[in-house]
Length: 102
Image (cartoon, rainbow, N blue to C red; front, top):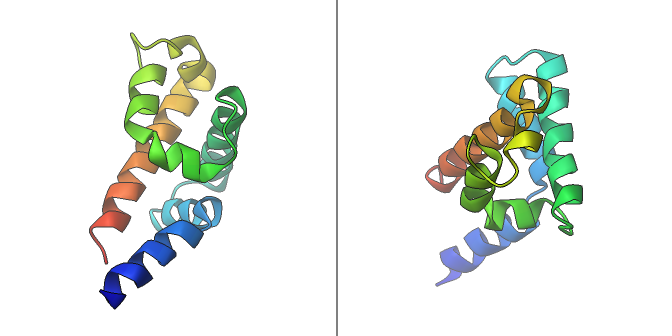
């Protein structure tokens, strides 16, 4: 129906970088942490040769697994006191909350 079309369009055109930043700021993360998490996701986009944030969204579960301890990219995930892994975990939480807040 129309509502599904609207929801799909909302998802397609979400600016995830901006929205994720707002999400973190709304949870009172320090500005430095917010910046590190955003740049961590942008590094992953480069490392994975993705075209943008939507590719991270589409692969979030695999990415969390790959960058955590025991994953194939765990040495990258562990950088800067696990900032990369933590950024992925927070982004996954954001996506789950967004999914259920329609």
